[in-house]
Length: 260
Image 1 (cartoon, one colour):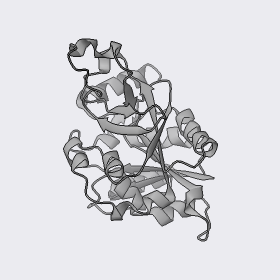
Image 2 (cartoon, helix red, strand yellow):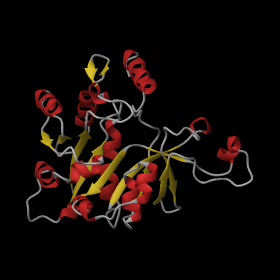
Image 3 (tube, helix red, strand yellow):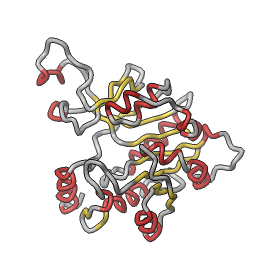
Image 4 (spheres, rainbow, N blue to C red):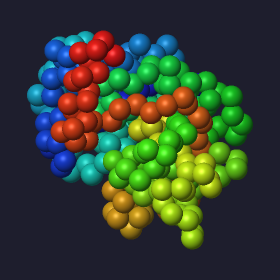
């Protein structure tokens, strides 16, 4: 199989505008993300997908290919899907090759401390599973202290490792039990913001119906679930800090100063 990492990024973040260029330990956050991804062994390339001319020029100055996308894209996955053929070419896949053999790994541009080993583990999981998953994403066991934090995306996982739902709320709801004690009644899983897509799945993105659940939760992966596309999971040791708020940006700066 062939693997390529695509990092979607924009400057107009609703909660923390311009965050991808925020300084973290002397580097813009998006540069840290790209360089962390480049440490993974399995991908053939790491490419930035953005509607910002400033980001395009910066990525190229740092030695990374970059693809221009439309500002009308409403999610990272749509941004990647809009330039899919150019990304597949970067993976080294010939035009006539079966697109189920090429995987695009979507890494969010706000994860400055992403462990490159998670990218390699995703590639290994794709190759080890039969049939090859349509979509694959990492999850981690969520501690009681983060269970009701709306900044943490939770995943409800079936006994076969399939994602049943994603939410910023704690799922499942434990009826008749104080929410502070829910962690003792069910396993809770947090979601790491990476998605591995078979290229043939991303090619169908524009044909997927609008998703009311995606609109409500503001989670793009729900569009896939509502359309009947299976999302498989694999377990990793812990979360990767996603910078969505000013407080998380300060946390990232503290981690960088400590040598993380």
